[in-house]
Image 1 (cartoon, helix red, strand yellow):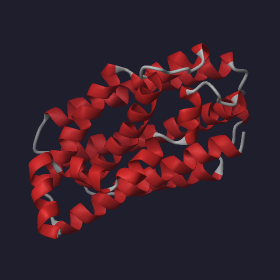
Image 2 (tube, one colour):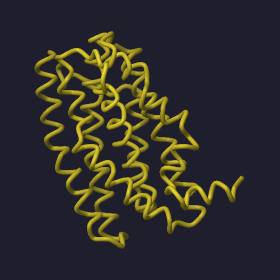
Image 3 (spheres, helix red, strand yellow):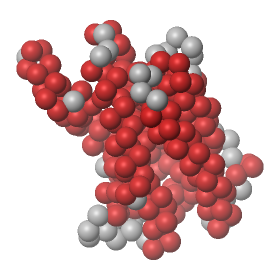
Image 4 (cartoon, helix red, strand yellow):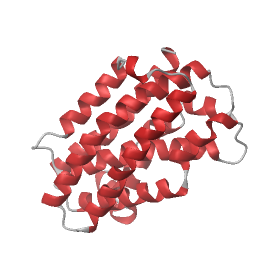
Length: 229
């Protein structure tokens, strides 16, 4: 079994092999009932507002994490183009924060009054853990890819043919479901795959755990948005 898994990893890449291995968890994060409710047009707008406010707080916490990944790329990467990919993603976060503020104003969500809920706190604590100096570049770039890929897969699915998503949420879906963001995620996946191919068994285990942890935290975040609306 182990030899077959390694052969598959070599053939299609470790990330793709992990996605097959953990298909249930990945699908749970990317086709969560919250996401599906946007696609079929049944979403409770109170849930959307909860998600909007909590994700605004999360993105603010994501900025220093991505900055820490950039520093690790500078110190540890064997390919200078890694920095350009990560820097491009980091630069887009400023626009993303501005977008959240505009959306919150449109939906009458007072961001200054929003406190992070437990699922958000847990996720941000995990980001802080990944920012520690002892965390290796391979591990954190795997986590960053997973974070971004979940949103890209989720909202791209919402936009697929047959979608009944409310018109007023179209911009939200296109923000993460668009082709450009998809290309960014593919670039992150290529970096992670390249790094993982040279990783020790111990680093592979830790990187796989990081991927699984992100998927679990994403599900908890979606759950929070539905339950605590």
